[in-house]
Length: 300
Image (cartoon, rainbow, N blue to C red; front, side):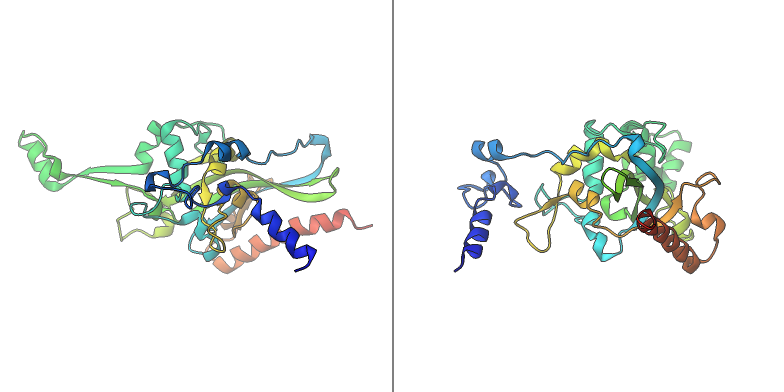
């Protein structure tokens, strides 16, 4: 065994136990102790998201704001979607939608807005009409018309769950930092997209026409929450990664559907209608323009 192997083994042996998917699982004497960190583990943890560096406006030579759609049917985007059923799974495994909704309910996540321009805030009480539907059956209306009290069995409630989320829409900005001399990306916001809860079970309606943005989250204000929520690492379950790391590293596949432009930031399908192939080619063209911008900066 050479010194290189000894060094690698030594580094991995000194990694904190807190990186494990279930802390203290090998030392737990009872199931209740699984996931509970010891005092020494908590003292060694530096459990905060990596801070963004300050970027002065004068250092930005060029920027482009884009909106992307992240389809959850694609395999690379599965970590944002699963798990959808949390009955028989640990509390440390939750989908991105469950993490966002839980913190909105508790009031811990306050930067929730109506649209991607982040001008009008929303609270959980304001989102209830978007997230669930309460309907009365025909027999219930007969009771009401007869002057009788409405029976609870004639009232149905349909609430959106993580399984109903079909895609995420993300807003970010690409910019060229002249101090660093490179093209960078900064995520600004994200929104879960699901069928309209009022038409989710209506088979006569086109599913693509029923999709709605449930709410928009200002991403910098949600980084600590997303840092504490972990994503299952399929390659090594002992070292999960956080949602914050996954999103900042762009470990997802998105397709551009809008860019900032003189036409009021119109969408691609507003000027290329009824042609999915040409819309995808236009999204690729916008992406190539952004990539070529960095090369053009170094062309003389």
